[in-house]
Length: 305
Image (cartoon, rainbow, N blue to C red; front, top):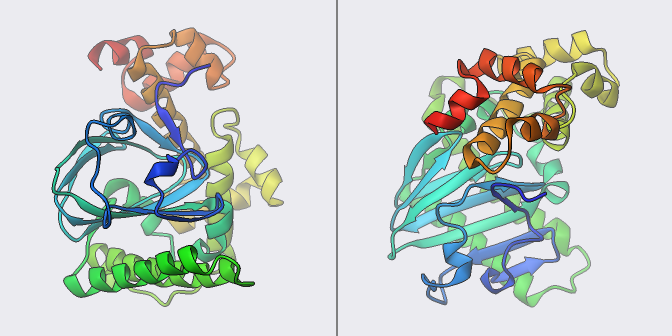
């Protein structure tokens, strides 16, 4: 069944937009050497169309120009030296790109990057990247990130046969990610700068979020996730609450409601079809669930969107 948005992962990025890659695990894209074809299909398809990331993490650097986008139903504007981190499972929609744009895009398959991702203190950032996804970098930090990016790009293009190519690439990515995340923490929570170490609870939270992104459309029961993680539902909910400020069930509801809004907004499906796609046992149950979190019935939401 056709979805009302573009599902984007490392495997579906247009090949002619890749400047360097390592199989489907890591793809680099920039416009340093060639101009963007603004009337081309690859460009027009990705403007004013909702995009959902699947099994992929992306870091987008805006070096010059401007980009306008919608994420989590909020409008954002990127300008020079801004960076945005986009995590699997989230929706975004690019509404405008200025023709003087200069950018860098790093796309990573989650299985390739997740061990590095686990090493960060993510308790605040998991929430902040939803409400404040864009971070502004100083000239020094941006230049440092781009220098590392260019080294990574040259390695992928010229040293593909190196025995430890994947581990070396992860080293570059880890350095770039540390620079970016340190600025997120500094900008949003200067009073909460902490040593970058990972606890068992933080690791459990990260693994829960990974499972949730893969299963939320068909599984809303916390017992399912607790079973997969080999802990009790009560313990899982408490840990998720301690780490993120929200209970596990609240995270599940956030993902389900975001998906439901996108499907309703598209107006390509009946409310019954959407309730079935999200694994509700009846349309009426879906309607009560949706109104509880939005204040609207599904039909009312469709009419105002």
